[in-house]
Structures are given as C-alpha cells and as structure tokens.
Image 1: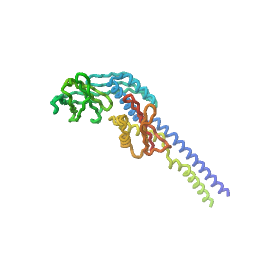
Image 2: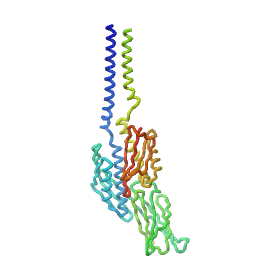
Image 3: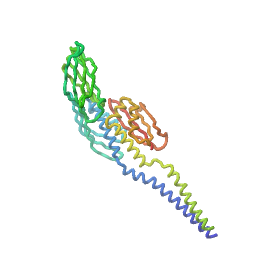
Image 4: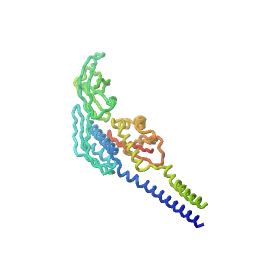
Length: 222
Length: 128
C-alpha cells in the first residue's frame, strides 16, 4: 500500500516538472523573439527610406523645372514624410541647375531613423538632360507647310522605359503659339521627332518630359 | 501491479505535456521575428517595384491593374496581402484584398510618394 503511495507521489512530481517544463518553453517563446528583434537588420528600412527620399528629390526637381520653387517643395515633402514615417530628414546642402537643356539637383541629407537610432548622410542626384544631335528641314507634301526633323538624345540619372517620356511641340507664327502634332520614333540611342509646321512659323518649341515630370523646353528657329 | 501504477503516472505526465504543448505547436503565432522578416520582404518588394519608377507611374497614372500585377509578381505566392492607395486626406483611391484575413497578425508597410504636388500613400498589409 505504502509502495503504491510512493509511486503516486513520483507521478505527481513528474507532472509538476512537466508543468514547469511547459512554463519554461512559454517563457522562452516570449523572451527569444524580443532578444532577436534587438538584432534586426535595418537594411530594408534604410533602402525604402533612401528610395522615398530620392523620389522626393525627383519630385522637387520636377516642380522646379515647371517654374516652382525647389527648396519650398522639398521642405513640404520632407515635412510630410515625417508625418507618415518615424524619420527626420534634414537638408545639409543642395544645388539646383535649371539650364536650357539641363535639369539637375543634388541634395545632401542627414537622415535620422528613430526605431533603429540610426543617423546617416545621403546624397541624391536627379538629372534630366537633352542634347540635340541634328535638326533638319525639308519640304512638305503640302506647299504651305514644311517638315522638321529633330534628332535628340536624353540623359538621366536613372534607367527607365523609353516609352515613358513625353514629347510635344509648339510653333510661333508671329502672333501666338500653336500646338502641333509630333511623331516620335526611337532610333538606336536617340529619338527622332518629326513635325510639320506652316511656312510662316518662325519658332518651334519642343517640350520633353520624363516619367517624373521633369520637363525641358528647347527653342529652335525655323 | 504497483509498477503498473507508476508507469501510468509517467504516461499521465507525458499526456499532460503533449496537451499543454499542442496548441503552441499546432497554432504557431506570427512571432515578432517572423513579422520583421515579412516586413523586410514587403519593403524590399516596394523598393524593387519603384527602383525604375514603375510603381510611381502606375500610382499617378491610376493604372491599378498594373500596380497590382507588379506587386504580386515580386512577392512569394504564400504571402496574403492587401494593397491600398490613399491621398493625403485618407481618401481611398484604390484597394484590393488578395486573400488577407481580417484578423490575425498582419504586417503593415507604407510607401509615400509626393509627385505633382499630390501625396499618395501605398499601403501593403501582409500575412504569411
């Protein structure tokens, strides 16, 4: 009888240990992930922040290329970014070039990413450049019109689909500007822009934009 | 006979152990570590989607099918997700649920765009 009692106690002790074992596992399940979390890599976080900041630089240059104020737009974007992301971005230095055939902005940022207590510098450059290779005039099938062909090359800081660029043209007849149809074809590494204008057209303005909205207008005498 | 009772206790102990452990083994919750891994996958996907500007163009040109296909093509099929695009006033411009359950552990990643004077927030919610 006493031997039976002894065996019963042993079983109870084993049950007690089993419960303690489960308790230990539960604790480990809670403690281990938080321990691992402390050693998370901020790499993906930094990549997505850097790309958003690059897009802000692009958007600010696009704003400036359309006549807006670069730094005002940049600050508006950075203020908004801080509302949605736990990040503080400060502009340390910037330069903007708005020339006839060149749009370029270089900005140096100081980025503080709060969840990882990270602080680093990032330099972003956005660029869109048009170079004219050739400009040809020929007679049109219609006697009161002439045909123009422009060969241009586009340079950018990023690779993007060729069909994402937009082209349009205006001509000046001595009184006002008129929109005209353009036919664009891509040849090797350059674009061929063909258009027809009346004989009395004195100026042609080519408007070229990339997918970011950075635009360049080039004026040609006919 | 007495030995038999002892073994019964041991068996009881093992059964108790199995019963207590089973819920944790069968219903493995999304641990913070798994959640962070998933968050990294979603972040990397959004970066890949916009590295050539495709995501930005689809959002601003409102090409929602292209946007959806782009994100799906970059993610493993085992991930359930929803995509929502909102403006600065939280108006929903586009939303799609691709098998994401309403409850459970969900990871949320937002990508902010500010082109043409307009804010667009692409939010991806995902679960394993």
